[in-house]
Structure formats: C-alpha cells, structure tokens
Image (cartoon, rainbow, N blue to C red; front, side):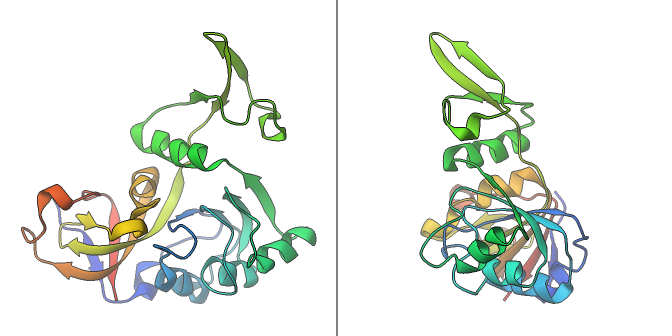
Length: 219
C-alpha cells in the first residue's frame, strides 16, 4: 500500500485542477464543506467547471464564492434554491450558469455507481415528473423505473476529520455526508483534514474511506 501525497497548503493541493474539469464537492449545506480547498480553487483560477454537490452554495462563501467568481459553467445538485442561495439564483436567472437537478438519493447512488463500476441502474424516483424527460423508462414487476447513469468526477474536494499518512480517512459526525461516495467516484480525491497522524494510529474499525488516488491537505 503506497502512502498518500501530503501537501502543506490547500493551494498546492488544487494546483493541478484543469479548466473544464468536473469537480465533486462534499458537504451538506455547510457541514463538511471543504472551504479551504474551494477558496484555494478560486485563487488557482480554473474555469468552465462542472460542480456536483448537494446544493448550489450558501450565502457568499464556499461554493457560492466560486460561482460568484465566474468559474462554474454547470451545477448538478439536489437543492439549487434555498433562503441564502442568492448567488446561484442571480446567475441562473441571467442565463450565466447551467443546472441539472438530481434528486438527493439519485445523486448519491449515481456517484456510488461510478465508484462501483456499475454502468447504469433503474430507479423509480422522478417517474412522471419533468426530471424524467429524455430518460429511458422501464416497467419492472408492475412498477415504472428510470434509467440513471453514473456521475464521475475528474476531482473530488472533500473534508475529513483525521487522515493517516497512508490516506485512510475518518470523518466527524454529519460532516461525513457525501465525502465517502465522492472519493470513490473521482479520478483524483483531494482531502482537507484537521490532522494527519502516523499509520497504525487510527482504529481500523473507524476508517470510512481507505486510501485512493488522493492528495491530502492539512490545515
């Protein structure tokens, strides 16, 4: 098992993200959002990005700040509108950003499918709604289903609580949310952690995400 690459700054961690990349961003609202990595991505300057996340930003920080900087071409998310999503709302109404709404369970499962090597799957969610438009429909045992395809990312930006030098990750409570499934769905996973410890320090039973192709950034 190889050691993960550990860098000392968020800027170094995101330096290789290219224009046009699909970036999976962990977090459920503000819980587990990798703010340091997002801020570094804004400084880095990559543009024309496709962002996959649970929502489309809160207030003027994190994802909202990335959107306000004009770096995002398209957002795939479950909750694009909420009380503090005025940055996304404004961009969308002005036709400056694309949106694909994905029901939350489907969002998680489509990324899980990407990580598991599943080519596609059938799901009943969104049958008979505008979200079914253009999707293959099939009846199985008397119930209608839609064909859903995996969501893969070039990069995943996620937050974890503690990592060891091998790349094993432990999350803290609800900050776990989308991080584990996004780590499996991306070609490269970049992790913001509070602490890096030596191998053998973490309880193996507490490890949620084992080593992958990742770059770790401690703060």
